[in-house]
Amino acid sequence: MYFKKLSNFFLCAALAATSLGLASCSDDDNKGDEPDPGTEVTSAIYVVNNGVQTGNVPGGITVYDLNTGKITDDGFAAANANLNIGDTPQSAIIAGGYMYVAVSESNLIWVLDPTTLQVVKSIVPEAPATTPRELAYDGRNVYVSFFSGHVGVIDGSTNTLTRTITVGPNPEGLAVAGGKLYVANSDGLNWEGNYSNCSMSVIDLSAFTESKINVGLNPTKVLSPDGKKVFVICMGNYGDIPATVKAVEGTTARDICPGTLMASDGNSLYVIDSPIGGSATYGVYDFNGRRLRDMVDKGVESPAGLAVDSVSGDIVVLSYQMGSGGWALYSDPCYAQVYNADGSSRTKFTTGVGSTCAIFAHIYQ
Image (cartoon, rainbow, N blue to C red; front, side, top):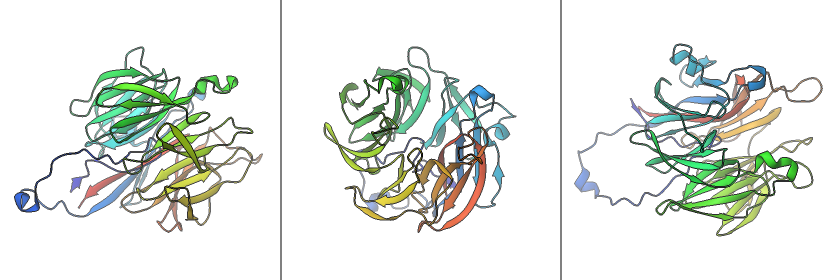
């Protein structure tokens, strides 16, 4: 079997398809050069769990094997002689034949074998760029946002952190589109000041220079489903300014729909809007914001993450469990609800504490 070198997935940091502008040869020139890799299928779902640092609840990676149905509570520990993954695993991507896991509070980026989850290398960022949050990939380099107010570049051929650039305060999500890197500067530590310094940084990757645009209040998740268009979730102030999915167009941002979570299969936007104290809604939209259909036949208790598989079309929604008082149980194990591409429920499995993102492992067979 061949492991897919670049998996497409969303929610931890949504991986954008990027045109690399490489010169191509004709089919005749390449005939017989490469064996047919076979059919691409999804082999596993990996769920990154934050844990609870203040409660000494460790994070980890839940593995759901789609072939056998086996669930491994912490695949990282199981693959690495019970090694602790660290405090607050935040996000992960599969890129260039590796799996990268950003562990925020431990200031650590793991480089793993994506088929076994065994450690290949660890990257320890140095000040001033610290506290890794989310990740993106452009076909050559991996980009990481640092809550310290920086973005770093990891050379995918050597898995070394080669350079950093200053952006805005407390950056979160990031995505590559059109030779640029779009970074959401949440200003999250200034929530009592109403996020007065939030912005989006736009980094020209050829010149490695940064400029800023205003997209809205408290931007967090960023997504480029096709390597051209860019979408951002601005979470607002959790009060009179609601969370909104916006399309970034030049130096402005246009409202698409209400939303607190988003993902894409490359053709449509999948959006969950789960406002505080309100009922969650689930919808699929085109890139212009037109609602196409309901996403799923029945929602979850307390949505915490969303991912859509570009190969199968399967939808995964992560959720907290709800207590008797109507509040999410943040120190209890979460769960993943898996839906078929048409939104019908298929299966549900228990994950770890503080599940934050799901990604899909693809193989050729």
